[in-house]
Length: 265
Image (tube, rainbow, N blue to C red; front, side, top):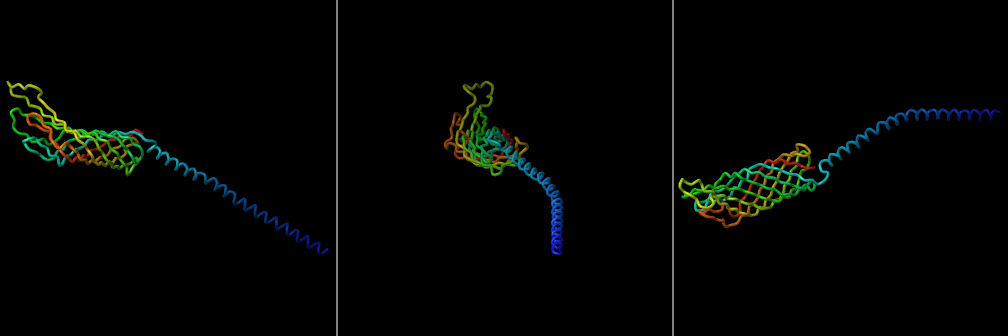
């Protein structure tokens, strides 16, 4: 009887221990689950924010260069020929010339780093005239510069805020010399045309660099610096009155212009 009482006491003690352990586990679970639930509720916003941020960055990159496109760039600046030898026949030669110029460059932007295209440059107001001498019929002289070139550009820095590029150019150069007889004195008649033109054609090979700043997604403003060698015929073409082309041989050209570019993204 005493042994049976002892075993009953042990059994009741074990049941009581299991009950206490179960209560502690339940309390622990009830304590931890709300924290886990709050963690699960707090986690999605952070993940969602990261996803949204990634999407925004992706959209920005796609907007900047979604596909190849065309652009056109216009410039106004100064064209200088520092070593040009401007000759007026027997009257002698002067050195150097500067002229205002305008240019236009349609380009194809193949990738963020590369662009190819062509451009026209026109300089109509040279500041240096060729030497002249006294003549029976005085003649006025005007000179114009025209170039048509292809260009390839590599963009070292590219983006909406700023772009920096360098490139090479090659093409044709035409120097136009026009000679026109001034109004003669009364009683003197001139037979034939009162003006004549000499067009000197040659090749241009040069380097260029530029920087642009974004105004908006399509418009940029900036500046371009070009350096080129003009290769003209060594012998000057001449016409009546012993007038001849004002430029010959190799001529160094330096051009700086302010630019406005429109990107058709």
